[in-house]
Image (cartoon, rainbow, N blue to C red; front, side):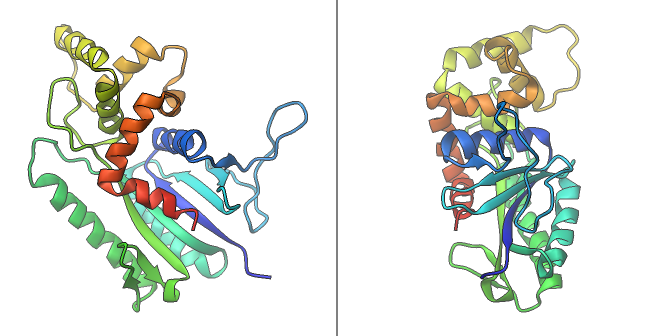
Length: 260
């Protein structure tokens, strides 16, 4: 019998976790790893090592039966810190794939900003991998291999290449990705959001969230903030636009590889 292993997605926060939940279940056909009780509620999931899945982690089974954990790390700097810890633990808790998920965080108007940020993140991840396995290598798909390929590490970045417009937040984040897909699927909604935001008196300093929450308030008010990022995957037109952008950034390919 082979030793138990898991794959892990490390993301920045709860909204990223919710977006992954919608993507995996609604679009990729994965299932919640929690056992379902007869009354319709769920029991606590257990990982392949027999431990309960806690600390805000979500757990899934891939279509082929593999186990995936999605862990919110509460900030971009913490993602890399948790990455170091999880790689060190791989000798006792087997790790098949580790996806490091971050916002690009640059301004969409900065032509060289995104490539420079991506290069910096790749270098940071390579340094961490090299500390854990000085003999690491890279696959043709760009994954980082540890222990002769027993563990693979990939980088998943949230961004959207849509040109800057008042109808989109400028910062390359999950919110911009979602708003770009909503704008492409429902341009009239996005235009209304742009008009509303521009009409506010004495607005606070801009963040990537104003656009996203305006869409939620206008068309997803029955959903809470967390479920909004899952609900966008239930709209076929929005889901298709999300996948177009995720494919362009390489995130779609990285997500599919989690079932390998």
